[in-house]
Length: 364
Image (cartoon, rainbow, N blue to C red; front, side):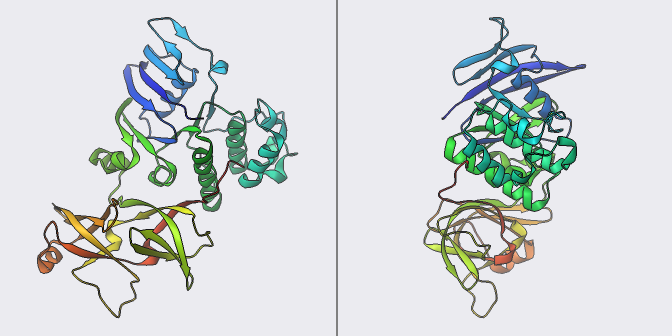
């Protein structure tokens, strides 16, 4: 399954008019923006729970809405699953009955998803007997089990503790990787976006203002401003290639980035976030210090700011990017200029692993 969609609509909320024009692509798209930007309304419009004022919505070649042709496919015929913020489980049913309602996958796969989501032992419980976080996980599994063409998750990690949040994000990421499931994930949390998304759509004032690959949207100044990101850092997607002395090594071209070992298998793909403030700069390798990671890079851009200087680095042998934030004094003392070879000094414990996807990940 490798579906695509296209949204080109306008709508009205009170006295305000909203606009959105973007493509829905295979993989996970984060719909981001501040509270009140219109993210949930846009999801309801795509699902058919509300009607746009005009425009078109197309999914997998089928027109779901076309104001000129008077097409408005019923919500239950669109094969779009929406998990709203309140989970919306049926209160008169058990957890298992909720999951079975509209289920289009086999029992073994359903039970495997329940196991991964940590709700296998809750199947006989009534909705009022489980916690809000458990209901949230059950609602996500119910939506996945309906085998939708498009899965829309509205603030999917609300109410989940950090461990469960990470597990569910890995499950969604693995599902998308292995099945091609198209996911639209609404969030105002930068970490959720960075953890799982391939693409992003930025909304502000009921308008979809920026859309495209995640790293491009993430790097835009309006994204940092709207999401209040002072030091967004950089994303690195790498594969675990080595394990030594309680550390795992991620291949970066011909170099290795070492991280604390959390038990991931060799071959696991990890998505990492490296904050600019955690990257120091040296003109040469330094002996006798505790910093294990000294990554040889090309300094490709210098951006002088009022409160320091941002450096853009490309690790040798890769097309990846690292950022470093240093003082103007350090810039002068090191005599740095664009094109220089430098070493990015990164403490292993400073690298934040967002999610790990095993090479054999599956929806089950």
